[in-house]
Image (cartoon, rainbow, N blue to C red; front, side):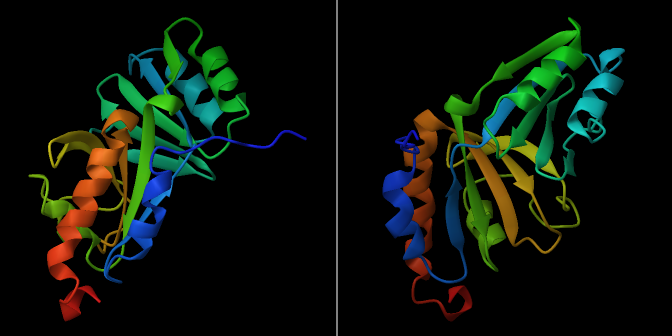
Length: 196
């Protein structure tokens, strides 16, 4: 049996992430399958794509859809990011068959990694580095926005309405920089009781 010898972009940050104040938890979600889907929303393939994914393609700006282990993030009028924990190629094959020449499916898994930012101070940490209003009245559960976080281009997916659970999708070339910024942004709060 083959041994998985892959090294994730943030492998060396695990100890630093664990040493953060209890108010913020950082964890890399390494090796997720990430597929870029480009498709005209009016295309006849939208129904077939939705069926292949097991969830309706989110057509509203800044939205997402989840079914089982499949997450679909709206990134633009004709662009979605499909994320799954499996790397068997089945989702990609099914999407390619569903698109039927009406769009494109590209595996971008090696181009990006995902950081889970959670805890009671997660929203405060992210708000420190981006101009997006992350308050639940604006950025509710299921919202997905592309923005800059500490000058790194990211997509932020809000997973709950309490502001305690986010996924930050970042290019691997910026992952180390972003990890360094996230850890450094927590330093002033190490003794703050609200962050413990």
